[in-house]
Length: 204
Image (tube, rainbow, N blue to C red; front, side, top):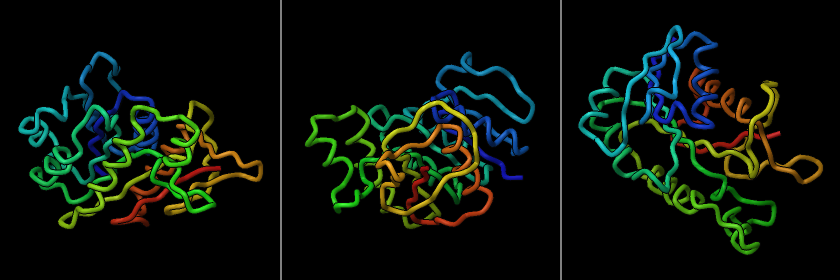
């Protein structure tokens, strides 16, 4: 078992990571700004926390094997998060980032492709910038995880493909995964690290 602390445990993706980790019997300290969003469950400790309160968050993170960060990067300071993990002495962290920094088949970043189409979600550029900061970490093991172009609620199949920096598309040119299967990919990485100090993506 891995002692996990999950920042953003009540979010769209964080809640699925929580489900998957608990199903596999990992103890999870679930952090959320509003603990009322989480109901008590075996194996889970609920804590109110925010990345804006670094001293308090540092104390909560201490003693865990791995930190998983699943937050909106337009609402959170990645440098503060990185340093808080450092101050807590946790030696491994997984960061959920956006798809924008992934490379499409023509070599362009997905963010640039979407910008040309006039589509710029508010989290897209901050997530891309967060990845640039995460890549600079050299004193603890990090993994960045990007979803494909589309991620939404769906089924847990456990069947998907994994790549490093390339956007995954199926035979129809669609790039997608369910939140449930994305969570499977993340907990798989926690259990059997294959992308230390790298970024990877998962999709159908």
